[in-house]
Length: 289
Ligand code: SAH
Image (cartoon, rainbow, N blue to C red):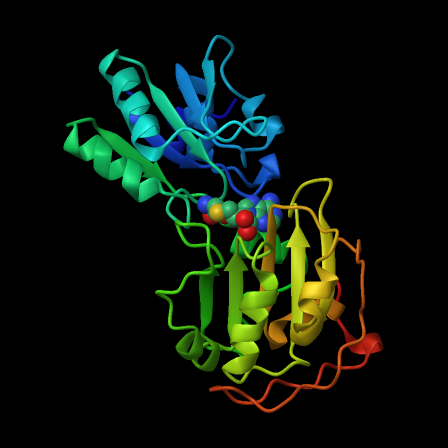
């Protein structure tokens, strides 16, 4: 599939586990190492967020082992999954643990790697394009822009117990980061928006939701923070939320052009911790790729 030798890719040795990020969906966003792993793995243990088109790239004869939620049945516990990886590796398989996005961004990759290390199993971590970067790019929303934000914060809207994370200092996050990218946000979106507003974020601040990013079913809603929960109704998961003035740049950067939802945003408000964002140029002056 790819010229592994020419790229100098490492051997996928028997008894090793590769924890690989599959990216947000589009198979074109796979890394060369991920493709290499797919074409050499004996056993592939994959999560619900891994796109079917990516699993179709597996070596013929590889065993595909689903480790997510299926048909309302409880998902395997984390210790179950780690034990499965260890068992397969000890049986001499080349084990590919395939996760959506990046394995170590809200993906429990570190937990599994620690279990492998404790069991003396050799492993490699192959980063993937996380939804908070790739999903935004496919929506024409840059995570940073020099004139707008010097920081971007990735947040989860879901604690390990399923609630809005309460160990997070929402006030500090709201005050300190001009751009927030929120994973797993839809379920608790009204509460998350309330916390951000209570911490001083503006109701009119641009915000967007990218559902099923980078897949053929991608949908984007552009709105304002105060209206975001209503705008999310009917959107399907997985979805990534982005809040901040960078959303405004989509007007010029929507390279897919599959826009849905409100496109008219109010003028920029006062800055947070950074200089005020530039007023976007009129449509005729924008660059399109
Ligand atoms: N490790 C993954 C994140 C896993 S948490 C990564 O790095 O991307 C699951 C959350 O990721 C989802 O609830 C959603 O917020 C986000 N996500 C993953 N894939 C997505 C996609 N294709 N489109 C939009 N959001 C996605």
